[in-house]
Amino acid sequence: MDFLTIDVGTILFTLINTGLIFLAFKLILFKRIDAILEQRQHEVTDIYHKADDALTSANADKEKYAQAVAGAKEEAQGIIQRSEKIARKQGDAILEKARQEAQAAREKSAIETEQEVRLARTELQKEISGLAVQLAEKIMEKEINPDDHERLIDDFIQHIGDES
Amino acid sequence: MNFSDFLRGSPDGVNVSGPKIVCSFDIGGITINLTETIVVSWIIILAVTLLLLWLTSDLKTKNISKKQAVAEWAVKTVYNLVDDTMGKHWHWFAPYIAALFTFSILGSLISMIGLRSVTADFNAPLTWALITFVIIHGTNIKTHGLGGYFKGYVDPVPVMLPINVLSELATPVSMSLRHFGNVVSGMVITSLLYYALSLITAKIGVAFCTIGIPAVLSLYFDLFSGFMQAFIFIMLTMVYISNADARSES
Image: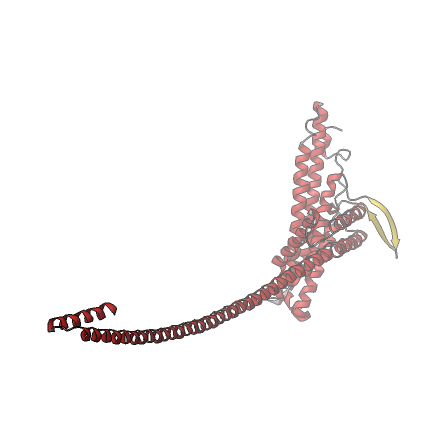
């Protein structure tokens, strides 16, 4: 062929060939790469969605746990308060009981002391009566002057003092 | 064959001719020549198809192979180029641009393996320029309407009609001749220089000129020029088409 010729056959074949290479690019390269890019885009979107869902779920769980912890704290506080109340009641009861027991013991002790004193007084009166009788007997037995009389009385009083 | 033959342009020394006719056949009285250009084009199409099949085999969304990374990079680069130059509404046009660029660059570079460049046949760039021409005018009619399209020829004044028509016709002619001229001139210059270097080698008897220098020349005239012309051709195609698109104007 000549160096510079316009050939219809070559133009037609070049047109067909250009169409063929275009189809090769479109159907083999671009279509497949577009599909894989789209698929990857979907996967990335899914990953983002899953991450968002996980974050939402985690936040919900966090909120739930926070509420649960707050509830537990309140419950614990209630338990502590109830326990304190019970302990205080029990303590008060124990103290009251101890106080009553102490009171009872004190009263019992006072009664016993009073009885002891009364008994001692009775015995002392008995002893004094005996001594008085003895003194009277002694006075009766011998003649005594006023000095002896006074001395006897003093001895008697001294004797009573030693006895008590 | 001597140096004076080279200076005179001896037909035995440097022979610059059109593509050889492989075979001819008649279809409805029209003779169709199956030329070297067509056969080389088929070789390119086969090679490109096999390359694309290899690149896109075993595609995955994770842990991708190097060849898949290259394929994805190439596709995204073409998409970005088309989007930036023509606008997002021409996104679908990317495969054609990729095909045109590949066909053009491989059509020029195939000379490096001893075959005749597809683009050194004027009919090849002319066909691509005609495709661009048809798309330009189709886009113009589609976006401006038939009335708007014809009105464009008498814009700004009716007397401009012949100049506007000439301007439109000049587009495919300039595009195809630029591409063809650059490739074929490179081919002619390379052939002349090869011939000159072979003569020098014959004169001095040492083949130092034919080693190294042709590689450097081939680097420019085949590789660089082939790439540049392919790039210029697709850029012009995109710019002309987007200029004809009323959506791009707005």
